[in-house]
Image (cartoon, rainbow, N blue to C red; front, side, top):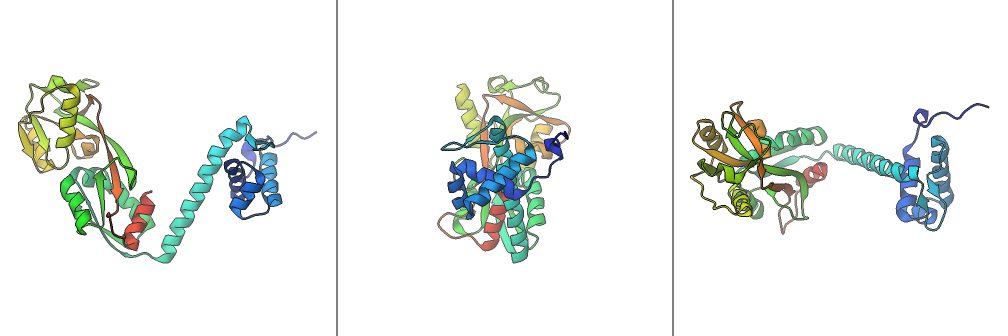
Length: 291
C-alpha cells in the first residue's frame, strides 16, 4: 500500500483556504457559503479537498462547527493567506487605476528622518504616481497644519483608535558613550538628575515631563532646543543629556548612545487624515497602503 504524500509536499490553493476560513469564522458551512456567495456544496467540497491535501481533519462537523487542534492552528495561516491575497489585489488595482497627485505629509524631524524613509520607499513601490512632500515641524505645528489644510496627512503622537498606527516608540536616555551610565542595561531617570537636561521642543517635552512625574521627580530642564540636530550636537559636546524617542537612533553619531529608561514610557506614532474634511484620492491611497 502506498503511503499518502506528506503535507508539506502538497499544493494548497487560495480557494480552499478562503472556504475553510469562512466556515470557521461564520460557524458553519451554510453561513460560510453565504458569506462567500457560493453554494454550500462548493464550500464543503473545497474544505474536504483541503483536508485530503493535508491528510488530516481540520473541522469537527457539529453545530456550530469546531476546529480540530490542527484546524485551530491552520485557520490563522489561512486568514493570513487570504488577507495577503487581498492586499496584492488592492495593490494591482491601485496601479491599474493610476492614482496620481502630490500629498503633503507633516511630522516632527525625528519621525521624518527616523521612521519615514522606509515608508516613503514602500509608497513609491506600490503608488509610483504619488509624490509625497514632507513638512517638518513640531508636534503642535504638524497637528495644526493637518487641521488648517496646510498638510494632507500627518504622522502624530496619537494613541487613539483613529488613523493607522505605525509604531510604538519607547523613550530612551540620550547619553555620550563615555557617560558613566552609558553601558547600563537601563537607567532610572533619578540617576540623571545631576546632568543638565536638554529637551527638544519638537514634541518630546510632554513625554519627558510625564517620565519625571511617574518617577516622582521635579521636571527642571536646563535648556529647550528647537532643532533636533542642535540637541544631538549639544549632547555630543557634553553640554548635558536628553530624553528622546527610539526613532532618533538612525540619526545619532557613533559618540552617542540610547539607554532604556526607568520608568518605561512610550508614544504611539499614527498616520492621521484631516479631521472634518474628505481626503484626496492620493492621500487615501497612501493611508490604505500604510495599513
